Image 1 (tube, rainbow, N blue to C red):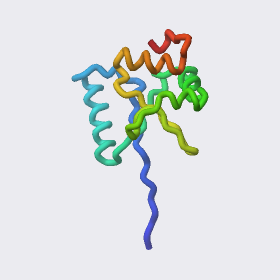
Image 2 (cartoon, rainbow, N blue to C red):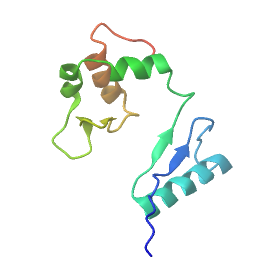
Image 3 (cartoon, rainbow, N blue to C red):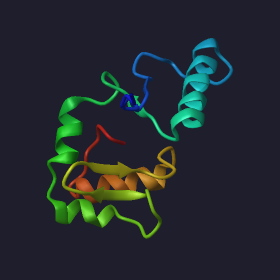
Length: 115
């Protein structure tokens, strides 16, 4: 008799870590990320206390037309939406120019909390 099991996408909690390279917490997080990618090819990042819920809600409640300005031709980049989920990927998010471009799309009048 065959049994059905569902694979669960791993969740990597990075919300309570100070991820400075070459520290114990950094090595542990790197190990978790590598394992998730090797075993599943993807993972969900938990950042509950790093991204204020107000900021999260503002971004994802923004009009579809505005979010589509942040889309790219390359797969899995920028904004994507389907009936079951939506995704927003910011390439090179540590770049000041990229962050400013993102901020300008979502907050044309500025948002000092994101900068």
